[in-house]
Length: 78
Image (cartoon, rainbow, N blue to C red; front, side):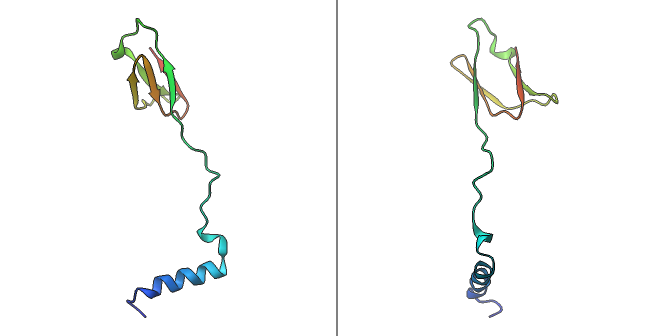
């Protein structure tokens, strides 16, 4: 059964029988959520930056005077 299709399936079934929880998907991981921040009407769109505490820039989108981004620990500088 060296190059047969059944070999990986046989091994997976053996692993599932020995350790049933090995193929379960964990749902306890935190999910990244996007944040929105409203901008004042007089704000220049070219002057907006989204940066982390470490000074790295994050990608963002400006739509209808709202900044949308997925934070790690961001702060918005205008």
